Image (cartoon, rainbow, N blue to C red; front, side, top):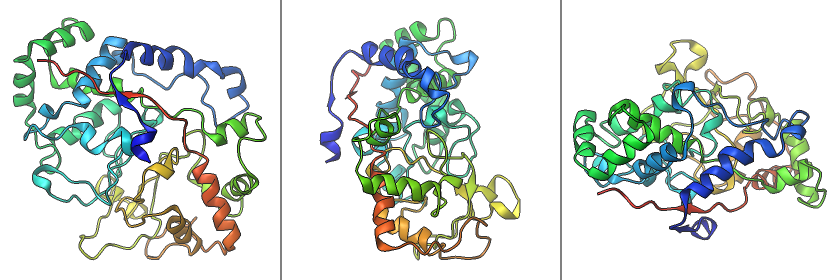
Length: 343
């Protein structure tokens, strides 16, 4: 079902880019002021990395190019696969040398709207995040000096970087900026929920409508999963069990040594959540039903539990309604093209 959702073929990148950069963010601007589920205007873009078709096209080539890894067989798209909800469909990621990593690959859908990045928030910007996995020994295991030399030896990349970042050359900074520029174009489109919330009463069924009422009411999901992107960009310990074959992961505590951060992880977006199983930072749950059950029982590990986590006492019908709502956040299909890599 995932492969049918994203048609991967060759087509004009510029047309797709311009449709997003100069149309999508402003079409519903007037309605956005009264609708928290549609962003008003475009996502924030840093002043030193303004969006242009050349920068996005370069970033896309880099994103799909396995030569960015030390082994030259892992690309960013290996883990952030558009056919798998911009994740990898695995409980936890697979890194260099086919080594199983301790955390799941988060989707990069709508990362343009994030204010902090990574499960533990160790990256403050999308540019900061972009080269993190490339340099990480356990992930893409690439020495940036070697990568810069490798890309400089490819004539096609020399031309592409000069077109995108005139006079700046091929550096770790311009690599990060290009990747971030492409990742900002990976955004969700209108979902059934969006169409219903905008006034189309027939866009979703009654179960979905009840699920949204639960989401914002009795189930208290919106306390953390708020706004257009359904995340508070915060960190919470939701009482997840540690898997037997994994060491304890203290999450945000590694970055900020405050007790409340122990075992806390970033709130993920719920956009296209039906496409991004398994769930949670450790991939412990395979289905949305399991996720809802977890919250219904108030989590499993009570030590340092977020104060918002408590038993919900949902009925079977209420659980089904919540799942129906979550599935309604699945966007309309998006055309994703595979770029021709420079030689």
